[in-house]
Amino acid sequence: MTDTGAAHDFVEAGRVDAAVFALRPDYRAVLLAVEGLVPGGSDEASDALLRQAEDAARAALEDRKVEDIPHVAAWRDAYRAFGAKPQRTRNSLEALLRRAAAGLPRVNRLTDIYNAVSVLHQVPLGGEDLAHYAGAPRLVLATGSEPFDTVADGAPAVESPEAGEVVWCDDAGVTCRRWNWRQGRRTPLRDDTTSALFILDALEPMTDQALLAAADDLAAHLTRLGPDVRVARRVLAAESAPA
Image (cartoon, rainbow, N blue to C red; front, side, top):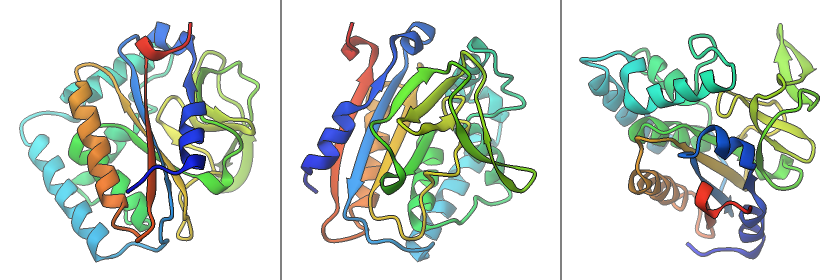
C-alpha cells in the first residue's frame, strides 16, 4: 500500500469550515482516497464481514437502545445543534445499527466493506466514487442554495439543503446532507468503481485512537481488492484547521 500523488493532493485539498468546528470543536474526520481498486459486486468476503458486523450490532444492542450507544447519542446532539431532528433524519451509523437485526444491505463489495467497518467500529462512514467528484471535498454550513442531486417519489430530483445545515460538498454541489445522513445520487460507489473517497466522522467520546483504528481496518480491507491499490490519508481536526 503506497500513497499516490493524485490521491495525496486530493485529500490535502479537503477542508472543514471553521463554522463547523465552532459548532462541534470535538469533530474529527479521516479522509481516505483510494485508487487501483478492482471493482465488483458483493462477494463471499464482503458477506462474511457484514455477518460479523451484524453479530457485533446485536451484541451491542442486547441490553440498550440504539440511541443510548455513546457515539450515536453524540451525533444526535450534533444534529440538534444545527436544527435537524435526529428521530427523523438519522445519522448513517444509527441507521445501519437499526437495520442490523434484520440484516444489513448487500450492495457491492466496496459499500459492503465500509458499512461493515462503520458498524464494527461504531463510526459514521461514507463512500464516494472519485470519478464523479468535482474538486475537493468540503464540509460547510449550507447557504441553502446549493444543488443536491437526489430522488424524490422515485424520480430524479434536484433539491437544496436548509440554510445552516452541515453538508459535504464539492464544486458541483452537495454530496451528502446533514453531515452523514443522506448521500446524493451523483457520487455513490458503484459495481465499476475503481477510485473512491471514504470519510470517517468522529465526535467525543470516540477517541483519536479508536478513529484511526477504524481507518486502519478499512484500509486493510480495501488493499485486498487488487494488487495495485494505493491509499492516501488525512486527518482533519480543529487544531489543524487554518485560521
